[in-house]
Length: 499
Image 1 (tube, helix red, strand yellow):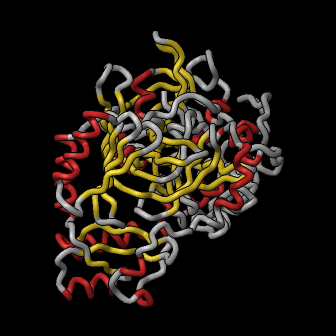
Image 2 (cartoon, rainbow, N blue to C red):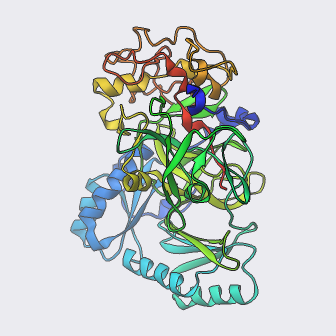
């Protein structure tokens, strides 16, 4: 079985010329009301988006019932925390922790109760809702299919929640799973061919190489190939849909080598160092094989989306706990990677409405929830998805792994016996760096440049490694040397596509 099966090239990269512009401009704030927040802005901590979720969790413990959500102001790079009925002592503690404190009307409990009412009375295909901490309301969205009696029912339910509790808006498109297009993984069913895309490479709980993709893909078919009408290379181990939307698919060849990088286009890659929880207001990037790289902001958490059922006429496939964003997506982008510029794996594309011409909203299955449910870890197990351990020897080697290889070109001759290990070059475009050999001493676990915390590891780094170690091709061993099949590592470049 060719080792390059773990590295399907990503197509549709014509739009990626905008990547260099998108990334520097990623910090534009989406919230113009932040200046109304209580507290002294000068005393609030300046944070990276990746630090915001940790501070939010800390504040939730401090504030208890007074905590009413939080969001990241990407313009000021500060965390804003909502407080309801908080006493002065709690507010002082929240400010001392480094947050901007904002007094709001609706408690988290009240907002969750409102969402519960919507679930009971308005589970209608084409609707969604999520708590928006920036407005301190439940944001309810109806797509273009919600009309007539359905619209009246939804509208009356929202009105019954009371003034200031929820906002109802219309979406021009329709909520759907993003199907077809782009380089993908394939399966055959009695109904015909099924096409989906790989999200992130992982290591299953039993040590097997595997990948995460959308749950509806795993429900649709069990055996998956890296080419249309090709022999299966991977088998579904776990699949959850509806309710959740993730699948764990194990490679049939247990010796398959994988890595954790996301193709950002134009020869650039982002090293994935850890699974990250989303924070409302933070900038995120979605890579898809149809529309390429696009960025936007997280607009809601724990979202509920009611897709029209694909199997039951008039039925509803409801998915809960999703990340809501204003990032665009189109057919073929489903299953693709949602990530942060500093290497956090955030989500798997589930579905949404709109397109990348007029805009829209897209929902994502949280990676943290998928990993917890399946028992898998990111990458090949060397980094265990834990960026915080980047300093240890095993992770250092893993951070450098495959960096040089992944600048290679889509060489159709790359086989399991190809000593150049150029299979990994498939997914990036450029030429295979001959210095990227498994015996290259620079790919050492002790090489300080092979660190997941290297600040040069940004999506704008033209070296494309995310680690600064271009010659590293090991597989995360303590020596950093590993096997010569470094080229086959980077499976989560087969981005998106629901069945």
